[in-house]
Image 1 (cartoon, rainbow, N blue to C red):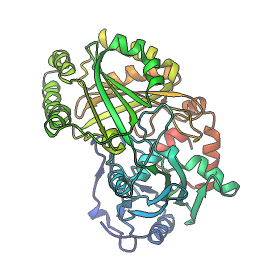
Image 2 (cartoon, rainbow, N blue to C red):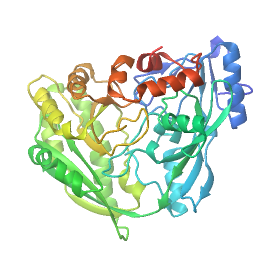
Image 3 (cartoon, rainbow, N blue to C red):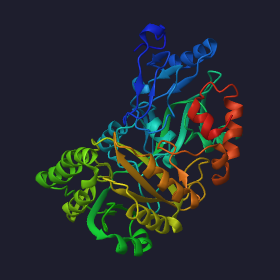
Image 4 (tube, rainbow, N blue to C red):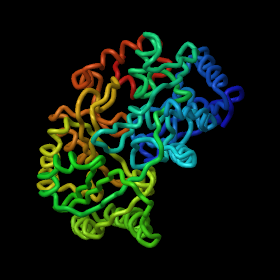
Amino acid sequence: MGTATAGRSGPGTRTAWHNWAGNVTAVPARVVTPSSVEELRETVRRAAEDGLKVKAVGTGHSFTAAAATDGVLVRPQALAGIREIDRAAGTVTVAAGTVLKDLNVALAREGLSLTNMGDIMEQTVSGATSTGTHGTGRDSASIAAQIRGLELVTADGRLLTCSEKGDDEERAVFAAARIGIGALGIVTAITFAVEPVFFLTAREEPMGFDRVTAEFEQHFAENEHFEFYWFPHTGNCNTKRNNRSQGPAAPPGAVSAWVEDELLSNGLFQAVNSFGRAVPAAIPSIARVASRALSARTYTDIPYKVFTSPRRVRFVEMEYALPREQVVEALRELKATVDRSGLRISFPVEVRTAPADDIALSTASGRETAYIAVHMYKGTPYQAYFTAAERIFTAHGGRPHWGKVHTRDAEYFARVYPRFGEFTALRDRLDPDRLFGNDYLRRVLGE
């Protein structure tokens, strides 16, 4: 892989890129790994001269083709690290290629933390925020909602810095670019709000499907972070409640952590899914056993060690954001659909929440939100399951995660996002020639 100044490659040396799940592949004309923002600006200018599209790709954790291109593929990993910590303002500014895991570890060393985060931390900060990565929270929202400023290279090679405190253009860009799906430019740095590191006490507990759905609003109201997993073909769920506490740290014991996080959640889960792929008829029986294998446990640690977990079993995922008051009905419809079908689902269904935010294309934009995520093991046919789930989710006005499998288009998004036109108008101003376009953006944002 070349640098921005030596990144040209002939047609005979093209190398295919594929995402983490292996369901998206692209063959770019050239791959560039700029080591400075100025090199990135030169990459963008040169691509425009050569008539090539430009896309930045993080670690490939999206299941959509949001970053795929046959033009210039920019890898931002050399643009990494903390640029500045402003303790008075409660912010940290990081380069776009910084991996969330590295950011979390570095912040913890400084006695700082993000307020909320998703359940994996292998993504770059720019990739995670650009697609709307989120965790679960009653009051605290997605990673993008914690952004206080960002810097991006636009189609004309400008370096544009924006925040909610800037001029009219900067505020307009800030309102949209926090979740920009790569359509407005290439993000080079992000300023996040941070706070002094704190402790979370996690309480994990098995619970029946009927009980957890009946009590969903109560669990949501009583906990800062509530989520649960339903195991298809069973009436069993596993719940997780994370709440701030005084500490001290009391992480799971080494043996307990290995059993829960490595053996059950990765090693055994991998074996079970491989067997289920080979013998689908066995999946319901496996699910009944697996859903009873997890036991209740309580532990306390700093945020990223509670929010995140290792995810080594590869899968394909669809996730929709629904109005929170409709999520239980939609989940019950999904369960009824699975129960009466011939589908065989070996992965649990995940339910999380988020408060309303003010980002134009956030899945929680302007409404209290709950998410339903469905997964299938890598290499297993997923279309029938996802199609059935998507039919339910769209009937409830659902908004699909920008980085996860879906079939929606610009016409649909214009209906479910009140500020969709605001985003596309900004895109027309910043990238009229669609230098940052690709087939995915053409579908979801229109021409």
